[in-house]
Image 1 (tube, rainbow, N blue to C red):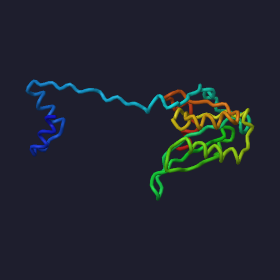
Image 2 (spheres, rainbow, N blue to C red):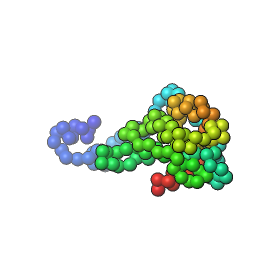
Image 3 (cartoon, helix red, strand yellow):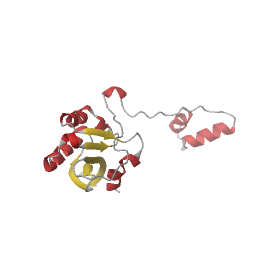
Image 4 (cartoon, one colour):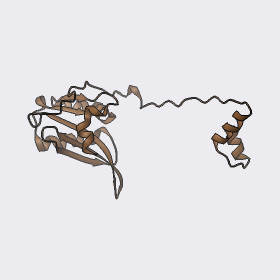
Length: 169
């Protein structure tokens, strides 16, 4: 508040300068920590176990797909790129771009990959990170209807999804 008053009075100084000046004459300010919240926990996001467990050497096609999303700068502005890789061949089986990073982006990518590869859903493991797009009810429901087994990396552990993370490197 003192810094705001100093600025209003026409003084050119930073918050840090005001704090240092106050400390030099014995005043101590109490600053609170900002807490980061990653969205509303009541939105119905679902997480699953890490069933892939870093077993990246696969012996048959269409048994494990991994996915990730990244931002790409284009002429039209920033776009989100969702990619699905077949872990057996390490080839892209589906990709879609969108201006919005949402569950519908993941579902469109899944549909594209599904139409190209036509996998047996009951033999397919779909692995991703714990992004809200992958944990959304719509995405989980789409995969469950096709009998796909869902696997997710542990929270904050990029090594569990290293195959798709490194695709964008």
